[in-house]
Length: 498
Ligand SMILES: Cc1cc2nc3c(=O)[nH]c(=O)nc-3n(C[C@H](O)[C@H](O)[C@H](O)COP(=O)(O)OP(=O)(O)OC[C@H]3O[C@@H](n4cnc5c(N)ncnc54)[C@H](O)[C@@H]3O)c2cc1C
Image (tube, rainbow, N blue to C red):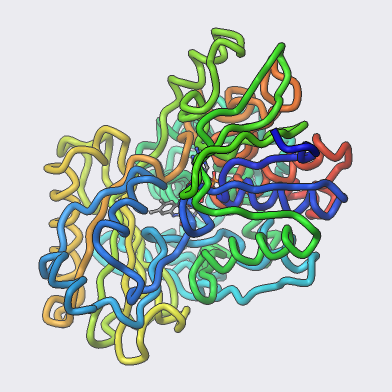
């Protein structure tokens, strides 16, 4: 082992690990962050079209979100060989940062003098009752006038809750919660759609009410509304966030190493001692007083001996379900989608067609409002349709979703199909690490401080934090850093994001 142990070794460069590292180096800790891949950001990394080669792209998709290419137009080898992706910047599928620059990571970066440009969503539309409905106040178009007063009453009751007041509804489904407050189907549907957007889960019985309410309330506090969704994209792709967080670590004396895979977190006598790693040049053992694992929580036991934890905890963690999605990128040779925001589809596939409830979908002309993503004369469209883990791994079902989306786009945008230059459709069963269902949120999530092992912490979108996944993993980074530095790091955030 090396002579001087690191104060903290962080395994993985997802936003959770990077946030924790940035906060800890700022507290004077010697931090070493180790990432297996050759780029930072994990599931929120980005790739430039001209960098893309087929095995590399496939491996990156697989190793981060267990994502796979379902089909492409034209054949993927032609897309790569002809360099059709040149000038495009792709995240690993559809990505929006909720509350954009006013979210947790935006605040953190600003605080460290490393603010980046977020492009906020501006005009979202939802397909409902065979028409596009705008959602910008004062008129929420899919709520008829005669229901506005009841709609307002339900919304007010929910929106004035602070995060701590919402825990009582953690283990209640959004369906049960809303049905108790209104019997008007239209108002119920509004909440079900919102809950799907927040959690990437289709069926309202599978979505936690507490998590939905606390994650959607900051939309209002941060100056947004239902019409904007209050999400946003990042100049140059989400990898910009990862690179900035790594810069903060390095500028404060920390070290960030890529292509360094941790094979084992060493635990002796109930205490963390360090890690064993493989690099392109060989194997190493690195000593550390504290180790923070940003490895997706269910996969922790690949690098941790499960016998060092309480057995019922291990069983619980192994049984956690994630939330998946069909996803993809479509390049158009003209600007078919005109708005600078989303299109949401309440029922891309109706209930009763072999899926867990109706399949909802969001698509957007990303490059309309973030011009850094596509050449000026093209349009980059991205989409996601939430799926269960089982559905996301079922090729037939995913193809059915892709067909339904194409049919929908053809019908609503007559010039759509002839404008497609290329399309890459993917699917993944690990969009959100631990699905935000009533039995998996709040105190049902694995603790950030590992049980039974001194000096070991977990960060990520699957541990005990809350929010929309990217913001939730950043939250876990704040909490873990606070525990390690013995300081309330959450004070950097406004109360409604703590
Ligand atoms: C297609 C897609 C669309 C999404 N859309 C959205 C969205 O719109 N909004 C949103 O908020 N969230 C979205 N998400 C989810 C979001 O990307 C994740 O919640 C978030 O990035 C997870 O961050 P994390 O810190 O938990 O870890 P991860 O990003 O999973 O990072 C873990 C890191 O650990 C590394 N690692 C793993 N094992 C080892 C090892 N043994 N040694 C060293 N390194 C290791 C991995 O390579 C990776 O870099 C989406 C995800 C995907 C894949």
